[in-house]
Length: 455
Image (cartoon, rainbow, N blue to C red; front, side):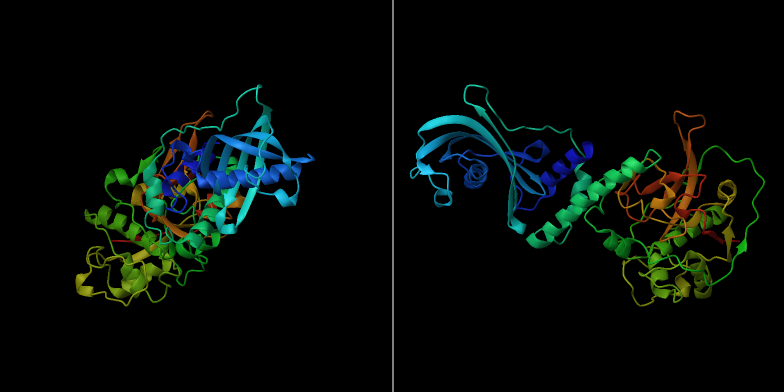
């Protein structure tokens, strides 16, 4: 219910000029009783209403008593009108949409409330509901819902820069996708085993296919190079650990509509390794990898395990500042003399999540692959999807584990989770981070874990 209300609120905020007016809280707008749109909608409702009746004479609306409209998948009108019978006009096709001058009312009979859905871009109208009572029984009125204040910043960031805001046809398409995605998000919410919240995100207007194309990869693929598996240190592992607290993680970045997640996973790992080994946190260039790594496919995907070898071959990585991100495949502009960091080799990390935690505590953030199927509508909390929703064998997104923790719960010990740095900007998820269950290989997060080595 809360998601549906937020959806209504969002539409009131982001609807373009041809759908939006000065809507009240909740997307419900008070309408003038003589508004042409109201009268036209009432005429449609009366035609539908009369078609349902077996009356010999036509029923006519004489006076509008209340009217509102609401932005849903189109415009939903609520109109309350006084209705009477006109014995001057038969209830037939000849008198459809007749005026009161032509068909004057002889006797006021009742008051009726009509709810009509108007979808102009589909040239479709539908009488959703109607209710009639005797004039002396009670007075009908349209409902006014009041919503709690919502965070408009998410809404504005989602739609302010969309190129289709003034394109009526494209807006209608996105509007339908958005509504469909809210249903999907609600189903995810119902099925998740954790505390995760799913709902409106900056990707809610994208189809699943578009989301995969722009923000995920066609598939993880097989690494071109074999990597030595690390030895796991024999240490006491704390209950919770976070490399952000140690200053080894740069701010969340945004890959844009480019399948370069693998490059962000790679640089995030190396940024951590350089800080831990050399004492300096440097934001590194993903664009260098997109442009200059000729083994991987730039915006069409790649693997950190391949990228490590390419960085060694190139001679290092430049900084983000010197080689800024463009979110597109460009010509390689790397200058070895400008390289700010280097790596010596790379290693793979075992699938056992207890061993992963031990290695992370001793050595730094871990580059991983993950199935991102549950991430499009993720808003926060600990995600714990069923395997049939998030196949561990189908990795399609590169991210970075920076730590882990335990969420307090009703059962003994609480819920263990990984803290994952993503590359979709800070407005997504937990300020750019994804919390996911730790211990059962959720979404394949433990199947392709690697790190660069800095001596």
